[in-house]
Length: 523
Image (tube, rainbow, N blue to C red; front, side, top):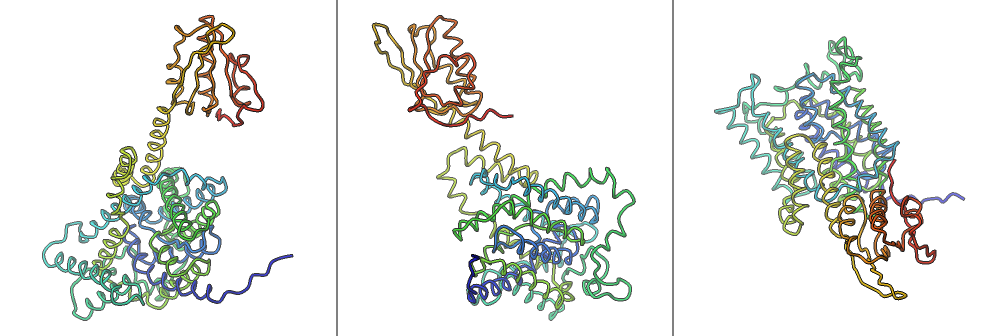
């Protein structure tokens, strides 16, 4: 009999209100991320709506907020600068397809293999690349660096924006400080007629946002697939695929990793467990839809997700409310967005950088091993030099190699000489893991030449992890056979015994004491 869940008014109220709060916080960041990517603010706003709505309904982590993201925007910027926005939308669709594939293959579970040192480097690197991306906004239309009054006005607006974002929460938390800062600075620029560079001055798509939404008789209003009419003749070709494929792969890895890491963080806070593979499929479907409708796609946002959860939004309704709230904002106040000074968005992004960078990581480094500290710094550096995808993959690989090396040093032998039936028998008790990294050390610890004619090797306190360990046992027994010495192997698992070749007949079988584990042999 199906269990009937009682309607919880307080929960739905909390989800709705927290979602509305998040929608207000999404506006300035979606616009700012769009500029980082080099596309019109409307592209970022609609990406936040589409991605947020689809992932809220079908995602594997209720309460997590997905939208246009700075980590993706930095990569998108290079694609747009080199090839144009039309290629960006195709790359977003391909990213979505890859993410769906990741979810279907159930690769989302591999996020558990990302160590904390890599996560710290990932967060710090993300903050740095967002910071570096802001400096391109200090150039005018000709590409020259701002100077004189233009630079002074820009710096004053940035400072005012950051001051409001920092100080307002001490007075009231009724409205998001980021949104209040953008509104206040914009009104000040308009009221005092300050000659500041605005969103309208740097818009990369012709026409105002208002005409793009409602139409002006010529533009025809916002049309989801209108960008297809401007595609190059060779768009659907292998040449185009090779252009967008590297970017799509990088975007896929970054978007998936950031979403899964955010999910892990929310899991820890809420003491629940999200479904990583389901989240990947939902995110992929959202990005396919977003790219089809000519937006920049996105992934989970750590900041907005934390705002949502801390405000009580742990259900799907919170994400749905955020998407609908953002849509309402776009439809009502979209015509004012072009009046926002660029300096206000830069100030917001500077504050995002400060909030994103894990400043406590410097203190954490003191308690880390040198290897973990190196991995964290490596990931941060590679993020700035290359991108987040290369950095995270390299960090995981280096961390895995360090782990293997450290455990390779932990294999030890305890030796003793026993007298059995008037014969001297040397007993080797193996301690520690036997696998590819420790196999050579394991073989080198035996004194085949000087050992007595009878040797016992006891694996009771050891474990053979892979086929390299099995081969090491076989090779060792060959050496003893060549020296005409008898060897007895004790306490090996049944699977390990079956994988042995030369030493198979040397195993002393004890069903009640032999361990039970599998050996990874690879295929």
